[in-house]
Length: 157
Ligand code: FES
Image (tube, rainbow, N blue to C red):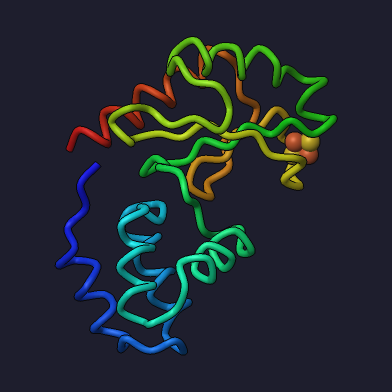
């Protein structure tokens, strides 16, 4: 995918093309594209005068960064024990079918990423699905289908 180098340059210019700005620049790029495109790593390395390997090492050290495309919304399915017992496998199956994704994958239109997560501390509401930080309690395959439809419609706007 092509990314606008001008947009990347304006982020670099905003923070200043200096090594001390590296994290802020990477955070802004990651926020804008939901991951760090390869050409942005090349550009940052070139303009900040540091090896690409250094930028990649920072990108892999901090969990907030992704080097692969991610959706504008992330669906986290809890696979902790309480959720598992109360039906996570069926919810996950429904999501895999509906979205045609396996955990860790993103839809082609970059709208949604499916991920699994360990206990999110809401076991009393099991099984739970967390979308962009919002917890959806007592989920079922039917409820999760409705949720996906809502998310798809939101992304069309
Ligand atoms: S196991 Fe899912 S919230 Fe605790």
